[in-house]
Figure 1: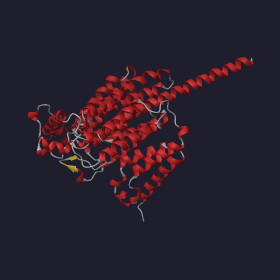
Figure 2: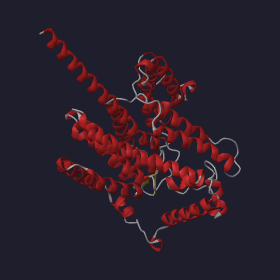
Figure 3: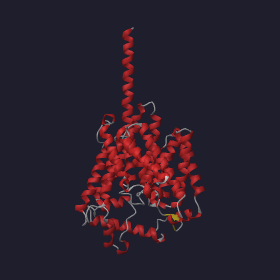
Figure 4: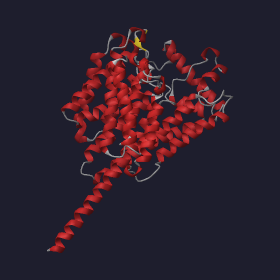
Length: 442
């Protein structure tokens, strides 16, 4: 007899697969995101899931694609491929090209398959999340799963902790590392803040609970990089807000600071005190990270076309044998060393284009009656990206799915804005035509 939780998950999983194919492929994307964040196989009830559907991500991806083919007439977008999507395809191509250009590799690394899958899923999503209702649905998924993961960190068993801090074990494979989970929380907190400000009391209650548990998770993880990115997010939130909204933002930022300070314990502040910019005063882990960064620069000059995806861990031994198997703990340097200068260039273009899109659509929404809703979401994504891109300076997120989903959020909003403008134009044209008919009849 299967546990009730397993039965419930299987029922929801089957519903997502069938719903994606028969009704709306967005159901498949939603199920994919939920299972990606939660990762059923890491829970006790996941052990009872039949082996035939352990590849739940692949199954939901295929179901989403089939649904898109069957319901293609319902898809609404102006261009088949946006510049951001072209850059993502180019980046994936450079990842594959890094293998023959880099050092000798033993077959195709799983990270190549993973980055390809990420691009496919993100691009399918960008053709489905094309109006503000669907966009907010995805935002709610991130908020709900953020709350779930925050509760998971709160209830984490003692063996998940090392040296007084939560090292990992919570969430999907990309988030099972504590520092990556903290970076994820920080991006989601920006989305939570926007929904809290513009939502009703039920949304405010959900966002408050999600924010508290995610902040508590960051405290338990004790990530110094996350702390610095929180500061970057808080400062940018105040700097980039409009004057009419500044009071609301400052109140929310202060509430977050007070709430975080209340949750923080002595161990958290002791670890934050270890943040140093003088290498002679750094403790051992920070000093070794700086050493890895220096080696990364040397490696990039020695292998300008990259050593190949996931080969950094092997090649680093050529520079310091004691560091074999380690990574640079920096997304940008990991990209530079693995994929080369050309890979880093495209990654930076992806980031720059994300902000360009947000800037462009912030001007386009002036012609919309509900421009305030779009304005808040554009603002939330901008602040979240600034904070997240700061956080991944201290972790290797080059092959992390979250990274590319967040970089595609501006595309979701762009297509939502375009469809809203088209709908507004159509409604205005219909109204004018109706008035003309009335005038003629008179």
